[in-house]
Length: 153
Image (cartoon, rainbow, N blue to C red; front, side):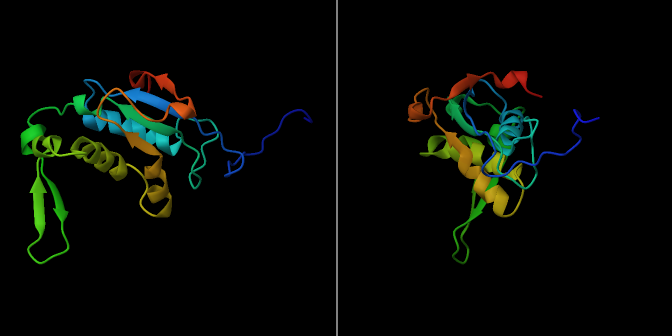
């Protein structure tokens, strides 16, 4: 029994293996895409997943402007935000947000953030997400590898 090891390996900041991945969001459903992205950012697809450590990948989403909603969510779903002033509650639909600068990024970031843990770890993890509306991104120096998000469950 000297050759077998039954010790649980916990990842920490020094031993974690973070990678950069690129995901093409063309014709992807927002919720299904974001749930897989949240798992990638969290590190749930890795064998050394540790719940309290940032062991996930850095995710770059390109073609975010081509994501779709199912049903009538494009016009019926409502995002609520508050400006901080009295009477400052504002409502937007995804169709209205798409017309604004960085609107599609807000849609995807909002969906992914809701699927990450609440607290300090979740606030750190959301910084590992980079969203670009077109096909070009400025993260070539990290040498990201392109993955097919449909291969993940």
